[in-house]
Length: 255
Ligand code: ADP
Ligand code: MG
Image (cartoon, rainbow, N blue to C red; front, top):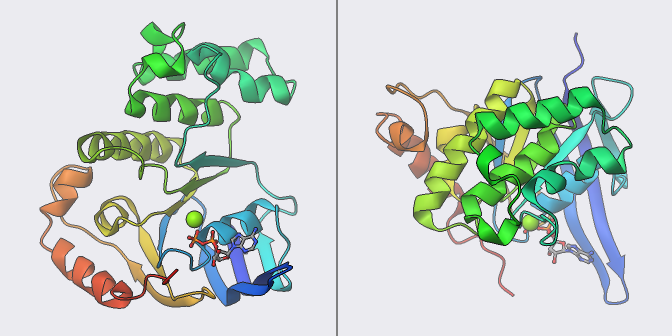
């Protein structure tokens, strides 16, 4: 059988500090296929960000295995809630940052950055600083900075949650279609069930901490056109929403 692009096999991980142990992930298994867009939803504090750290190799599993199809860990592009653009650098020079760090600022890669900035309407603002741009534009710039590095896997950790409702719909559509065009695998962590249903090919629902999978739902929407708004008008949308809502209601970690 072909190896999946990414698989978690019975993975457990706990944080250890002076106050004791926090089991974040327990006996967690799931797979992601090449080119698949997977959303992970779960109560806050259940271990979602920890899962991304296990994928990117920041943490090693204490039990179980995190396996990739390739023998090496694939190139990973991270997108977080905050865009982490440097305020003193222009948009262009922010987009060059990853290339500079990796010593890969080649003419081809710079040309690719130029293409992406033009394609996604940021070329005209390339000499501006991040705080002169809207939240949505900054998130697009942050994505381009990642795209120029040609990642094989995108890890998105609630990347839209700091945006207001209107911007969020526009930006999530934009970002999702940019990433889909690239044909790469995506793991999107989100609190927003509507976002998950409208963007993902499959949703993985996690339990309370320590996280394990309580449900996996393949999403098939019959709707005209693409995007968050079109998806909401699909006849299947509410059924998916109700199933997810039932799984998650009342499960937020009490702090
Ligand atoms: P989520 O992303 O689902 O909100 P996290 O993966 O960030 O959850 O965290 C899972 C649990 O582990 C939480 O209870 C959190 O408080 C705890 N945790 C996260 N990071 C650390 C750390 N560095 N040290 C100790 N506990 C941590
Ligand atoms: Mg988190």
